[in-house]
Length: 449
Image (cartoon, rainbow, N blue to C red; front, side, top):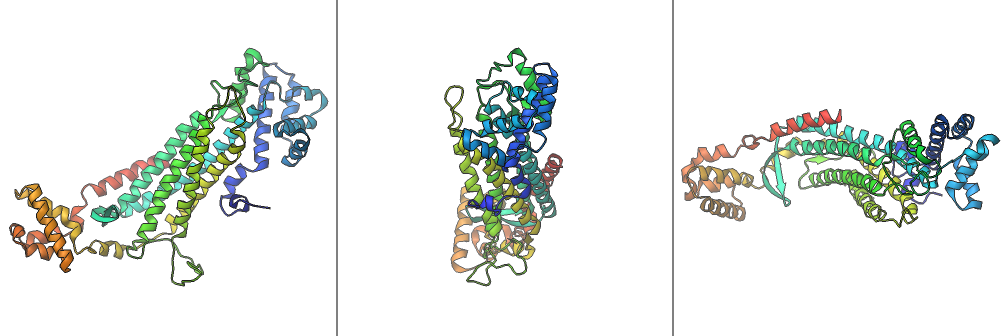
């Protein structure tokens, strides 16, 4: 019976949920056993025939999550049950050498690194595709004037595409950040009970390096019985940070879809219902879903940080919660990236509303440029500032267009009607915005392609 929405299939793509399934976790641990046995056989630490038998048994499919669970009912230890199941799958001469020199954490931590590696491959692929889609929109709208808002208020003119270029740049930064984090966090640790490789002796680092190379991981430089949890905390933090960027995009989509703004809207499919009570509602539910999941994703960071200070060479205070935090963080971010990509791909951009919103304040969005014109005529900044503010506030109270109010005020007589009209042209005030958007897109494409 599924209890969590992840288990029930409501959240999480098939690619990601497969990585963290019970059998997938077992298969990763069996690959660790096989890689270590091969390395030990290669250097003569254990008989080559035994090493070959262990590898074959580990890859045979005979050691299943169901079988391990049955054995665990007696032993009360899941990793010991895996080792027992693997031993039973081996011919008798190989059984003494199964799990030689290893401890449970060697399997668990190295297998977790393998799952994290596979998860990162899926996640970075999705974020890259999202970033490229954002760059496409950014370039298309790089020179389209739109309202720039600060504090929820009209501030000045901005290229509509510049916000999309910002997001594409952040996607590229997250992909780069995850690659850097992976080099630190994705490690193979096979150094035994307290991290000394005691049973394998001086050859333990060689075994670990050979196993790491086969598994596509980096060998642990130093460890206790477990890999330092700073590595896992960094993994979860990187995912949460990317999730926060996705939430930033989602929040802007939600705001721009407000009835009063209506510059964009999520795709609304035929037959879709926005409300059970109000037939006309078209709610930005996908963006709201990203916002909601981001809050849960960030919550995993706190738990991961609390796992860092373990007792001595290890304790189990991290073990149970990591069965939640790492899969949950990975599955949530993957779902969010997939959802946000669908939003961007299906999003409608309403050009007419973008243009008309510029005039929603009667032209007061041009106040910055009126101030500039007055300063260039030699009027002291604060004097000009107060005059622009006075006329704008009076125009708001009377419902007068800002340009007309300026033309009728003696303080602005020097600008003349023609000079005032030249100021009130949206396309004249994009500054370096179009060039910035295009150059940011080029850099993002290079990083994401």
